[in-house]
Length: 581
Image (cartoon, rainbow, N blue to C red; front, top):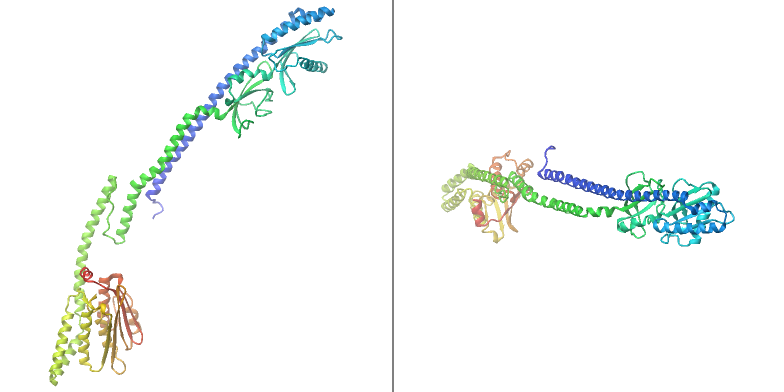
């Protein structure tokens, strides 16, 4: 096959690949695009929610900032602590101030507590707190002491920030503090960052993720189920793989953030990627179904193409190859459902029918020519035999041996009657052997005591059919060329059955075949050099065997103390002979 020619199956595979690859690439692109759009939409909604909540938190922080500054400037109890030296007045002022701050704490539920510290009275430790009963810090004395110690340490170190909200860490928790200062008096409030997240937890179910607070640099400030320490908050949203204690495996999370304008805070929401794509489940199922349908259509399409196109083409191709090999009786399949293949098959079969009829006609002409040729070959009698018989008859007449003349005449009549049989007529082994006996009787009358022959045959072969002269030809050759040094000739004919075949051996004890003649007669060449008898007799038999038996006939010539002719042909019955004829 030429390098630039390809089979139909190759092009079908190319077409299927061209169809399949873009389809799957399109599905992958659509799937990727939808997932990214969903992530962007969900994170946008979550970011908007965080921004709104952070705005509310900033509003709360700003209000507390204004309230603390106003309280510091206008509250008489604060002024009393700053200027009064009477202990009773100061105690009364602290009580009233505590009551006011406690009420303020209840009104501002997100604030864990307020505290006041005055440096006016060094002997009396003027530090007290008002704690929200709903706060995380329940031990009043411990809480008061911790804040006082932290405050005094910051004052002594000069690190107290009284200008804006800042964060302090107590134990494992972070708190936002806002402290205002005026005339040696510090008024402040603090808010638990974990407490700020509680409203978000109510609107953010566990299967939808979780939220926490970080600094603007990304340091985690509140409880975090994943145990993270830092996050990169530079992008609008990020993805991260992690494993929560309640989960079996690591999974992908998206996180978005919203920064505070009033404090060093950033609110972060972690959203499970599978929760985001849960909304995509229906679309994903549709795409999966489409993918399955496409995958199912691939073998189905291959089967349909195989049955509808490739199989008919393959059958037609094999039919053409067999016709090319000589099997003109075969026909293309006309069962194809495709109109084009049906027209192609029927047209091809019609062409084969015409070729077959033409070949039959040519073959019949060739058979007639062969028959005429075989008849011509069969009638090519060496004139010496006929002349010798006439000379022998004349000699017998001169001697008055009329009985011998009668016998010779009868033998000659039988001999020539057999010789003039139709060339393509099959005869029985018994008839062939009777003809050999007639021939040997004639020769023995010519050469009394000079010829010795014997015939051995399996009795079941008596009625088997063979071509005429297929044994007598080789016997005649032995009579002509196989006399020994005493001038005597001995010929043995043996016939035996080998399965469904006849094996014939004609042997003599003469000089054998010349080496050059042996080479030629064992070949398939038509022309024989040397004696004309070899060409007429041996080629005659070989051609008739080839015409009648084809490749089923075997003939071989060799020397073994004389010449030996051995051949094997099939046993033919009457109906086989009729078909051959």
